[in-house]
Amino acid sequence: MTSFRNNTDRLLEVHLQNEKVLAIAGAMVAYTGSIKFEKSLLGGEGIFGALKRKVTNEGMQLMQTSGTGTVFFAQDAAEITVLALAGEKLTIESSSLLAYDTSLKTGTSFAGLRGASSGQGLFSTTVEGHGNIAVISQGNLIMLEVTPSTPLRVDPDAFIGFKGDIRQEFVFDVNWRTMIGQSSGESYQHKFTGNGVVFIQPAER
Image (cartoon, rainbow, N blue to C red; front, top):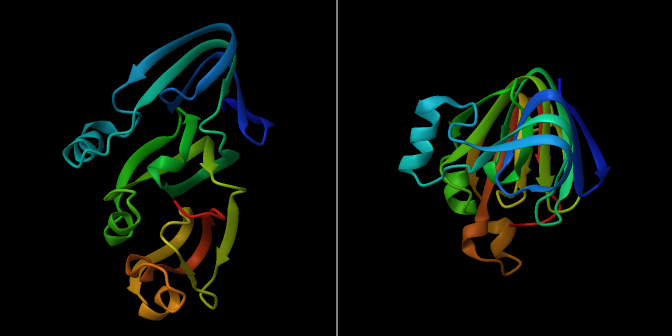
């Protein structure tokens, strides 16, 4: 597993020993050692996933970073959180993905109305396996537990991702936003039930 660590809360430090890592194109801000950067067409999600994004104009621009040395990544001064996956599956908004191990398998999942209403697109990214992933957020990444007795509703604009045995629904509540004068589009909520963790940010896109 590639070594991921936070140099600061807005700078990711990745140590490579003849290893590879995938990151959002343009996210590298500095590096030491013998490092090579190449454009990655598929990003580990395969041809079908890449084609789905191409059709909907939602392609992720990824670069493969390889070699031996230390690479520093950042994105628009956003907060960075490193998550270690141990055979788990994480569903995440593509815009919240910074970097991840090439050992992780990525794919696409249909976001439906949630993505359309929040402007994030029709598809979310799925990441699964064993390895590290760096997630970016506006403010500290917040992890909220979901249990059968405590379902969770989330503003789509604050949603980052989720993992676990979770069912997601898109619901409409005309009261929760319109009563305080917000736009009618923000009356939509994302409802999570089951067992797992939902990741949100303390800001709206």
